[in-house]
Length: 432
Image (cartoon, rainbow, N blue to C red; front, side, top):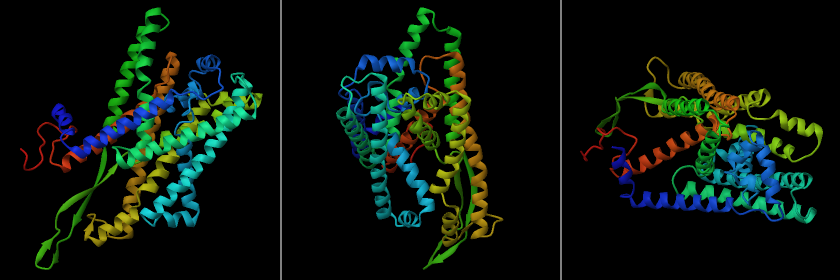
């Protein structure tokens, strides 16, 4: 049962320690969101964000967990780190040195992570400088000048570096993916205030009860659809031949190679949003007519924004799948262990077959992610909902929750405790 599964969490000392560590670091992150950057007129800044609701600033504010509207020390959020990760992964394909580092295992991964950190600092400096100059032009700075700009750049860059460190610590010593959990926490923590605001507008008559009911039904349907597809797999049958090792016979069993419909998870919408928001956020703070025209054209729900968003989602679905799953390596490992796909010759034919299947299901996964991220946002903008909690947020929240629960489940099952993702009838062998 689900209840007993949650009770079993605290029976595993290591798992309990990891979960408490994760919650503690997320609490530290939320405390940092409330610490404002010095030199800002908070009332004037709040008025700007009240008018910017539903624009690209609203989306960026959602990913930063509300830190941008307060211009806190964590105002840039984790987006510079994500942007740096995108750049490094793209460069890995075209620069042989980085490609060689990727193949060197743990040491190569550490070196690439180090380059990603350097890139994060550089992008944070650029964004921090753009935001500080833009804030001066908007008239929300108490004492404008280079002293404010330098202080803001240092503060925001240090904040992003600290968030990056928190995410890495959660991944290594906590539970789940640290970066995804930070974004998850930033989205979920704003949900209660959004619900209260909706009820307030409903009581004053500014919002229609019918629109609210449609929104609730839509969100429940999208959540159910996300869970259904995220658990979906394309299972390729694999047969292992019998072989003698010493005096024992091994192999001969039938199994399958599971390929997820959405192999890339929540990465494509996060990367796509980061790519669009980087220039759009800076443009929002620059008071030049043609720059402002570009910023206004990237309003969420608009045609240009949606086209760019869907295009980047398709690109990163295929790109991230290609980076994380190599059909040639899978085919070689199967061949070394005496495995083969019935009707397919081992080696290159098997790799081509897996690649063909993976390409087809990735197309379906890209269509699914695009539909979930774009269609609810369009409908919500039509109903004029007073907060941004569209399909992208739902996909991230549900996807990260499923991934984190799966990791908790694996920790419990390795110690012979029943998890909470299984049916009540499922038991670990030996603990009936």
